[in-house]
Image (cartoon, rainbow, N blue to C red; front, side):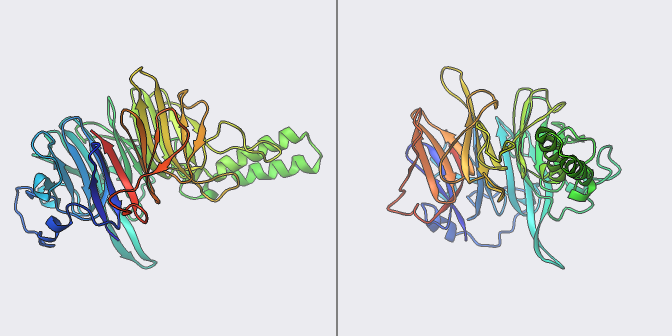
Length: 403
């Protein structure tokens, strides 16, 4: 399957899996093996796209070969030659770009490759790369350098970059936040020289496996309370505490991150976490039920949080949007969750989770496994967008951006 870029007349830019789009003919003219010394490729080089980000100056597109840049003041982007592509030969990591963020002339990317292991084909993170001059020069940081056990706070590694791809990057006011699958959330200085692991629940040590916590002891406490016919509220609270510890390893597996001032949002495989003091303290937002197994109102839709987006409307009011997939637990469902009160309460909408979001004057847009959807601002009803005569009907769309 391949991802191709879409260029819509509404200035919405999106990328799609398994669709034949405007640049296909141009891409066919580019050799699959391209040899270069220092200069980037003066063309769009790639067919599999994972993300799209507008920096305020440039449109950046992540591909399986590197990172492509468009200057909209010079070209529309509808032809491959409108773009410049930076690859490993220019200084970024090896492989596909798995995460991307950009502001002004600064751009950060994460890369990964597929590697064969004794248990089959797995993904392996190949590090982070960044440029402060729109790609003219790059600095590369290997995953082994970040997760070196000799680094304070990284004593437990992980010792391998297999299954440690980075899937989320956010450029903050005083550092760059990166969400790694195995290594959890890391904060990096803008010069790329210092690293700090900040776990999204405030824990001191990372938890890789459920058996590394005291969850079993708390479950035993709950059983003891039940055997003596203790108050049901005490039993319920003990079970909730035990369950949280049992799933702490899932909370430390991170997929997405967003910063806004001192507020940091991290999407994990066990809910969404929020810090309002730049990572010093955290709260966890997830699907929760009461003692009668009834899902509490105001919860997010699912605990696997794959995307986070903050939209600020013209009046200054902000809304946090998250793509919430189901982990298979009771009460969860693939959906889009949003909060108008800074994450205190949530509303659930849509029939599928979203990989990415974008906003224009009149519409909210989202990319899903079923295509691009949108809804009028202020409405609760999503509609599927039919692009180019039905091409959207069986396509999976990953990234979307409005300029």
